[in-house]
Length: 455
Image 1 (cartoon, rainbow, N blue to C red):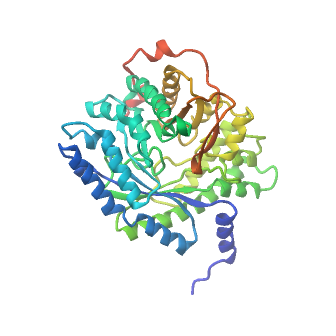
Image 2: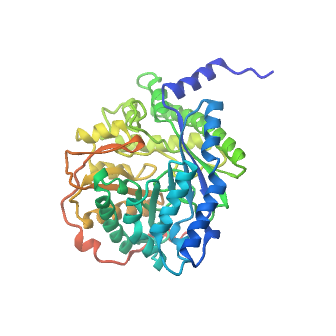
């Protein structure tokens, strides 16, 4: 007979009930490449039917596993092939219609979000890509569950500055069309450098070209668990011991994610994809990446040393998680979204955390400038400059970076944007007032760095 250690049981219960351990998302990734047709209405119907075929039991099975293991599964999501590619087969482009069909299918199966309304344009745009990008503001304003992502740069291709400028316009317009909800459309729109095709987290999830017909990807979360583990260490613990403790904790968190992911995949009768190791915070008290920095010894997020703390955290989480699963992917690291992290919200509100400090932190974090509210009057050129800077960090460092900023219509520094749920609320942060216009409007492509020739 196999004996289960009672301390391990109690530890797991405590991680779930007190320290906010959860499965942040189970994401069904699905190829829609076989839905192409010259008739956009046919494409829409094919998309709807295929999503229902594969995802009709996703929410039901997730609830069964929640009940069986007593581990919360917070979000059930779908990620599909970039829709610019699927819709490009049509004689007449109508990407807003396709967005509505995706939204209809997502509502029918009961998921929280569906990602993949996007394009990969790091080296240039096709006519279909351009048509989809132009449709984003209207599509996000007329749907509830659609998330959109555009890959603008890569370490191999450089930065598509024409697309960067265009996305500055698109973000601004998307926020304006959803002004009654503090520009929430822009909260579901992200610009990427080096976007991974197996990321289960929104708003950037899509089903990459090298992926199978379908797969089940899992995103785990446990900032509260990591914070509690650090607090359990004696005062003055060295960085070596601190890193080991984080690795051990990440191993436990990832093991939970692997278990749930494989159970879900088996129930759905599809392949298991990856576990994304990202520490995804929530606005809940005690579930904060910023809280981890304080547990490490910083007075608050934003203090000098924050970037070093984040670098160590990210590395230790990856080292611990990779030992727990043979299939780690997605973004994998620590998220630093302002609106979705209670500690980050407090730091930004008190002026401890500036926009420039956040940009510096993105050089070592999992993603980038995430869920940051900025004044609604921010010029398009400035938004494009913000995107360009973040794309450069990703391109040079050969890592994924992203920008999800929200120019909140009618609001300025000192105001607050409120979205509710996991999207939380964010203080409107100040941005640099210097003009980027002449630089941004040059057009063309910033060439890839020399390391792009490695092969």
